[in-house]
Image 1 (cartoon, rainbow, N blue to C red):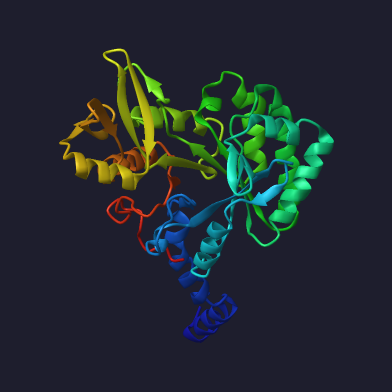
Image 2: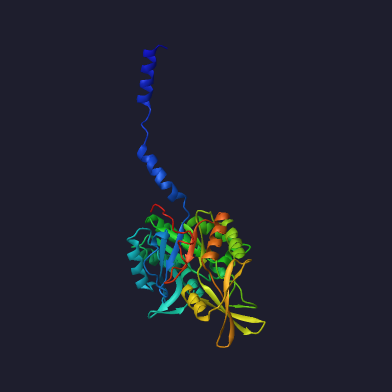
Length: 356
């Protein structure tokens, strides 16, 4: 091949080759960190109102705002929380309010996490249809819904799955998302994951695993409400059912104030907000200890003549949980909840620039 022919051939090849899409490549490079970055969610609540700031730390800030009336209607139980969330929505992100099965009357909570209300709303196909229709109407101005229905009676799970299927279909037809909250106990049930868990997971856009309160309100001895080994075991069980892309492991920022009721036999626990925990530690001048096996801090105090132990979460304990969860593939994290006072989110490593 002489020089003239070679030059002509090279020119033809260059002309035929598609021009590089520099804009697409730059876009892919710019968006890659955002696509790879694990999600971090939190919630706004009415009893401990967060101030503005640190919004950039979260992919979603969800208002804990919708509940049930005594007649079973979906109502805006905390409209001020919805207003605060709308204000934050201007900064970007989705606006997905939480629907909880608390029963509200005259602005006051009558029943927390009512299983009876769920039986009424989900027990029969006709009732499920009516409830779904109300929820779809409630979601009209939002990007979706988060269903936080707790204490579901065992016999009601088939109806619950049917309800989720109907609601999922309705929301997805409208271009909206559906998230569900699931209590840890269901993943420790021998049959629940296969009978109901996989079906629910397939229908929704995300599953919020409530990975907290390992200990109940009474215990033989004080200790962490949520130890690191228990969090990891719970997340592993959930990952066996829920794809890692859909799973959000939610960690509580609350403390637990244990009061000795029967010496050496019984302690009663009271949940404290993060702010109340810090205030109590300051007032009691309690010396902070660290439980290495639980990866949890605590301090001791005497109040009204009774021994107290307060176990809580701080930057160190949350950071260790987050790191360990990401180590097993449970990378998406939720923090329950964002209150007036909270750990330093930036110190937790949850606030990098996410390209939002």
